[in-house]
Image (tube, rainbow, N blue to C red):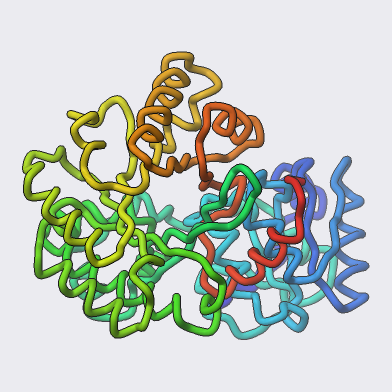
Length: 401
């Protein structure tokens, strides 16, 4: 259901509240109608230092897909969204980590339940829509029932998003990481850190992994991703990667999709320390014989027995994003990441830095020898329809900007 805004309160009170919401980041406008263009520019002039940047829907998608959050609001007229309305709404949602809020200009059809629509091109409606919103319960505060999670695994609530990974030496896109989302009918889009631990505690991790893998492989050979020459990463919890049946199902899904094994990276996500090194080695060697690549996720000093873990047959090491984001402020973390990158390279591993959100972090990670980068500076996790749009713009760009 699309929510239409009204115009309560006085002109000056609404103007003052909207000014606090818009701030100096400005507005990003996708509009075809002169009425909407004129109205949005007129409202923006009421606020000191607020600019309006106009562009088409594809360019808007590229701008909101990556940090920094340069705009307080994205305003999109429904008749010129280029078929990207839902993708734009996804990338400006709370679940994406964006601080840009999207508003739809005019009433139109959309799958989004939380998207505000401004029904007519008049200044008071636009001004009111720019006011801060307090009518939503943040997904991180909402209770998720186990019955909902079981329903999600049986139905269509589990969705995938794809976050690009690029090579630092030449910015070449190398892979996409498939990330699970739970699209709850009442709570909206929920991030994995809110529902995956509960699923694992309930013993349903294998079912979730199987569902996400099946969706990912279908997407990789589907109309949006086929022919892009990118690898894809699928997350496997430790308990699942130790299950021979789970690995057999993975191989069956991949083979049925017709996706070559060397285009798949199985990423070990550790919810608990590795205790059975021999069992893990058997599983990893089986995957390697089948042609898969294997990554170890969230590597940091807190990982127990890191040295023997790195001696297992991995192909990729991923540095913990929280550490990466603290590299400029903590010399000990800087030294750990540099040392770990060096140790990984001695073992022939590719090193990926997660959480690369600023150009200064990018530059420092490249200085210490990290191979690939993943994070909001490159792109947020993208809905599948947004991947080709982002990819085209990324390849054309020669630098960040």
